[in-house]
Length: 569
Image (tube, rainbow, N blue to C red; front, side):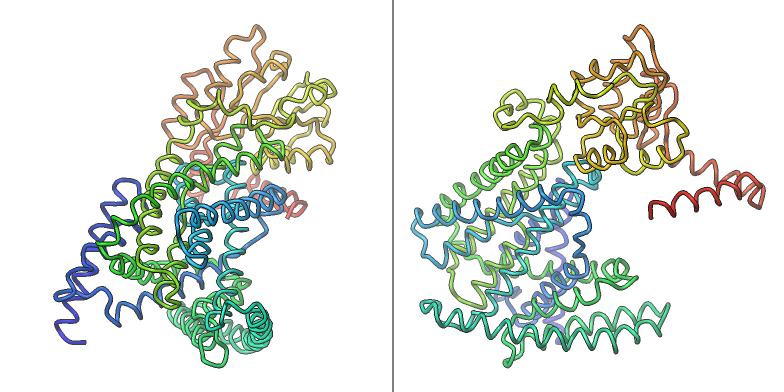
């Protein structure tokens, strides 16, 4: 590399890093900063060329690594908790959004092929962005968080099928249905043959090699990268005819069952993000400034459709399934933006297939920027948004949900000694350690899968949202001896404490907190005890460290833990 090329590359990276960091400061995904960097540097080709062969190569590697990590992460075990709603909302939203998006694009004067790519681009939401936002809000384990992740997994799977299908017919005359059908069939046959060979290589060559290396992390990492790029090259070869990205995806899927799968994904992620940043710089550089004026009106229309139309579709589907307006609303915000895959797909259609023009590319980049920006704030302030809009959202509750079903409340004896709010991880372990008879316990939970399982186990369970204080009188908390909340939400626990404070016969109230500040607030609000897992764990560790050994009680506890956990693992 010449010194000029080196300086050029360093400047491109510096500008991208600077604008990406500014985006993060405003609680936005750094992708927006990278696209803007390309947009600013694009016209300066005489000084810095973000469209150089080197940048294109590195950008292509970035997308390949993105699909490789996606293959590593594919885990549909979470769907067993929210399988029905994940599939219905995931597939239903894709169908309705793509059809309506296609009609809007045709109405705006786009060609059929451009309308197809626009419609597909408007359909998919960003798993990476949503998971990061929900994790930052500690809401991945909430019902709406798990539903969101569930249907995003369904979307990812369908996106993979679309990518494979498009790469299979990229060199075929799309006007001939017969040619397309034959090409898809041959592509399927090739894909199965190559996948079978890759599976055999993985099982009998790659896996034994990785097992023999044990803790040699650097070599294991290098081998996995080589494997991803090797399969990418094989699938992209002239004889196979798929894209490099499909090869990377297959490489990831074949390694997804290894015990160090999470570690491989963790090692690859920074490298993926580095190369992927260059892809978005390249995407921005390919947008001509002259195209922005033509893209303005379609951008506004498509952005409104994604920000409002997509959430409406999800709320209608979830209302039809019987979910409450709050769960439906919070979940629906996860589809109020387009994803990196949308931009990658349209970028591929522009650079590799040549079936969309620069205006279409500019529109999708702008829609991505607008929807990612606004939806990030919508998710960040979702509770405040709900409190403002809740009185208008009742029309999305089409069915009598369990939370409001009079028969469910009347047929359950709600006067119990123990009332447990939330029965996920901590709640399940609490039940295992409890000596009381099941008839002494009332469980209140918002997860329908938990409700079903616990009822099968013989517990009295009510499907209800703890944040809905209107339901508290039905639980006869004044007759309870102890009320326990394993839900670490400060707002919901404060509501519960406020209600109990006014009861004539007050039960013992134990709640759960996520941080130091919440612990103090909950004690001030009247909690008898606050479970703060980090504090409890640190006290136990300090006790062990002081003694320098496990005492008899801890050894006994360890044995009991193993016995109990063996029953549920």
